[in-house]
Picture 1 (spheres, rainbow, N blue to C red):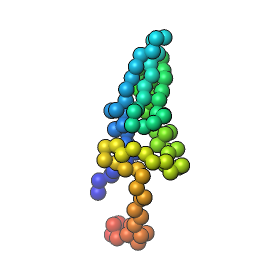
Picture 2 (picture 1 turned 45 degrees about the vertical axis):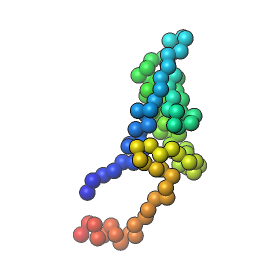
Picture 3 (picture 1 turned 90 degrees about the vertical axis):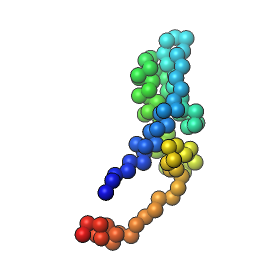
Picture 4 (picture 1 turned 60 degrees about the vertical axis):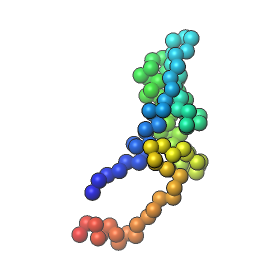
Length: 94
């Protein structure tokens, strides 16, 4: 049985990140398809880390508030989850 981590795959949004160097030498990063996901930091590496953290928070808040999130890497977090009956688990384990 393969394990599929949807939120980890949704992290593909980071490949869309756009970074700019500001006049003061700091960096700003944003993900255009994820409105409002933006980060500032003194170094590019820190900016990337901040942007990833912001993206994670943005996804969790968006899910909680039922915002429509963009489909990234063919992952649609807007779909209702499918639920299997509890007795299905006993069939898998036997």
